[in-house]
Amino acid sequence: MIMMQSNILDWRKKDKIHRESNNKKVIILAIFITFILNSIVIIMFNSSLNDKIKLNKYISGEVKKLQIEVSDIEEDRKKISELKNNLKVLDDIKQERKKITQFIDDLSHLTPEQTYIKKMKYDGNYIEIYGLTSNMSLISNFLNNINGTMHFYDTRIIKTDIIKKHGYNDIVLFKIKSKKI
Image (cartoon, rainbow, N blue to C red):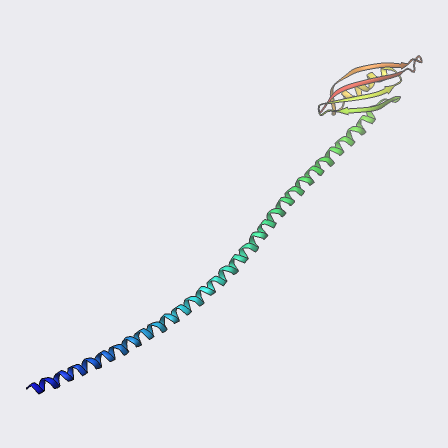
């Protein structure tokens, strides 16, 4: 009986050794397969990551280009706004020039003969007219003419000086002040 036990024990030992050997092979194979699968996943992840990095760089570059374009557009809008303001100023000057031209034209028609305007000053509210005439009655006519227009009101003689007396044809300096409408 003892012999039988020895054969069974040997068989069990052999079986155990065989199983351990097979287990080692399975474990090594499992580790190898795991390594290969991990390598494939890492390669795919790196490839995907590289693609995403490239895409991110491309998008960042495009965003920078768009930011520059937006900045240029904003600068262009500012320039356009400045140009519009300049055009408005020029148009205002043109309109004011028309008014001044009309005013001077009207003033020339209102000025009696033998009356000359030497200088005018305008401060925004009042206009002062400095001139020469041959007699005082012409100054009175000029004053009445001015008050009868749409350009002036509250016109007054501020100063008169007779520089040369020649009877009927004196030389009179005058200064008239009026509010401008």
